Length: 97
Image 1 (cartoon, rainbow, N blue to C red):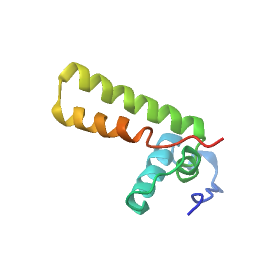
Image 2 (spheres, rainbow, N blue to C red):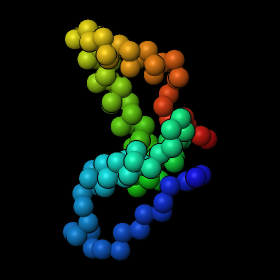
Image 3 (cartoon, one colour):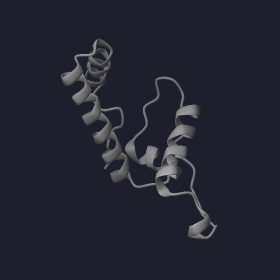
């Protein structure tokens, strides 16, 4: 699959779920249907989440910052292993220009 679903919101804005909830739902759906060992671009993830590529970048950056802080301040071996895998594979979502 090249791109995620096109999300159209026909309901009035006050009847739609808040944007954060829509992004969470889109990410949950993507994680449920994602194939093993398939990497998605930030644009593809954004299409599933119904937000911009920049928002996916911010979410990713904040998650990595939390992980890094936990790694250094709590000295958790599981977190060390996760970070080693992340940096071995580079970024989980690659930027396409």
